[in-house]
Image 1 (tube, rainbow, N blue to C red):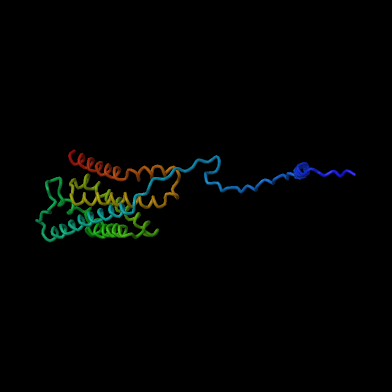
Image 2 (cartoon, one colour):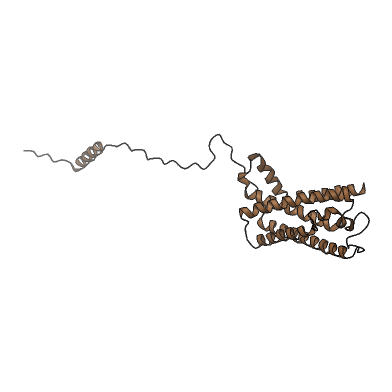
Length: 242
């Protein structure tokens, strides 16, 4: 009887072939996709332009401190000059240069005490608040909402009063007071930087068409203020010469 032995190589090959044929490739399930949060603006809308940097608190503090000290000094000198003029009718104020540039006619007019007391008293009180606010901002303090609103109303009222005094000096009194003009410049400076500071803080609350104008004013704050002061000086000079 003949016994047939399987060849080892054939058996191994057949076994590997059977194992390969028995393997079944299972379909792979797709990995779940997690929706990423949308970082860009919604479709169909334009992204809001990046606003210009606000006027720094330090710059506002320096401007208010300088304007407050200038206005306080001018108002204090005017108050002293008014006192000497009341006690001595023949006293000549130190700011009397000629017939046109003279504090005497201005301080002796009825407009110089429109509320029953000398106007410089208002300047002493108001400019002291402005200077104190500037010092507070420089020390790192911040304006609360009610204080910022009150300061805005105060500088607006002061500017309106200064405008009326300017008109009276040029048209009715026909004389210019150098100390008064220093107070005018201080008032305009305070109004400008208080307004920029408050509107910069509340930029998102402003109407959209107003925001580009605010950004432009912030970017050119010093040039705009200087141009306004030069314009006032030019109009004043032309009016006096005419």
